[in-house]
Amino acid sequence: MAIPLVSETDLYLTSVVNLDELMRDHSIHSEERFTILHCQFTARASNNNGGWIYMTPKSYIFETAYSEWLQVINILFVPVEPEKYYFSEPGQVKKFTMIFPAIPKNWKTFNFLEDCDHGFFLFTIPTNNSGIYHLNFV
Image (tube, rainbow, N blue to C red; front, side):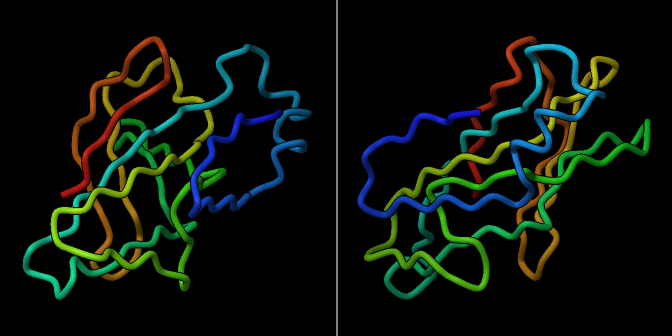
């Protein structure tokens, strides 16, 4: 699957799993194969020069009622640990995208967990029909 790239000077493209293998997986039958999280993080004033950000491949969306966990497939436009993106000042915004397998249709909400020290955790995100979500990490 080709993912259109935008022209950013700090483009990062990291496949956590092989997308071609995922596409050939017979358990995936519809066009709704992925969940896309468009994310943004604003550099905190409490950090010197705004601090830094990275994401870990140990990032998941999950639904506790069904005990189902989906691991991130791909992370775009932000480094993956141990690499870091350093902000130049507080208040600067970093936008990035995370791609996951499709959320099962029986999920009404999901949670996001970045499983690392000081990782992000968002609760009770309502599902939608598009599979595309916009999240603001604080």
